[in-house]
Amino acid sequence: MKIGYARISTKDQSLHLQTDALQKVGCEQVFTETASGAKSDRPELLKLLDFVRNGDIVVVYKLDRLGRSLKHLLEVVALLNQKGVGLFSINDAIDTTTPQGRLFFNISASFAEFERDLIRERTLSGLEAARARGRKGGRRAGMTKEAINKAILAEAYYKEGKLGVNAIAQEIGVSKMTLYKYLRHRGVKISSYTKTSNENK
Image (cartoon, rainbow, N blue to C red; front, side, top):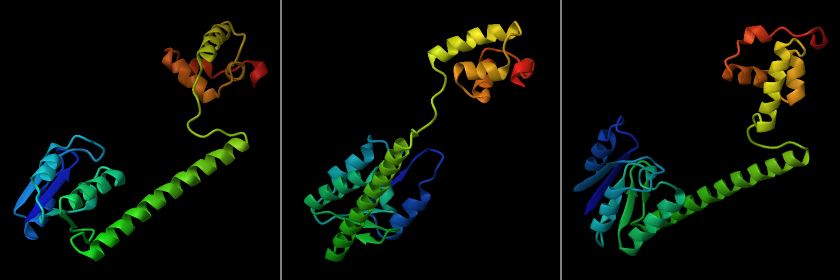
């Protein structure tokens, strides 16, 4: 017996493309649900796994409809194998009911895992090399509490005409753009702070 499984991520999407394809290849029953790729709670998938019996074939439009990750996909396929159930993917030309199909699936999964490890290794190596050159990865940190306190003080100085924008930015150790952003949050009109004192021209 062929049992189909179709999944969409949001209610705005349509299941018709998947269900039409599943029925076309002879699925007698189709389990459908709406769940994001990363969501672990998939009640319809659990129903399908409980429903299938030895000799059945689970059919999906694409492999990414079934597993939320490579690890999860392998776990699902392992469970199907234990129950004597095959897996057929229409778009990926995967058929685990044949020795060749099982071999191809395992090789594909191994290469995908290998590629992910390489990407992770290259990323870590890049970050390590950047740190060795004195650079830190990730988004540049914003203003610290200490910097904000300094900015408040510097703002008061500026209103007294003692400091210009460049001097304020240098004093608290941030760029002029970061300082402007901070001033906007405080409700300060930027135009009134673009003029710098003679010492900052």
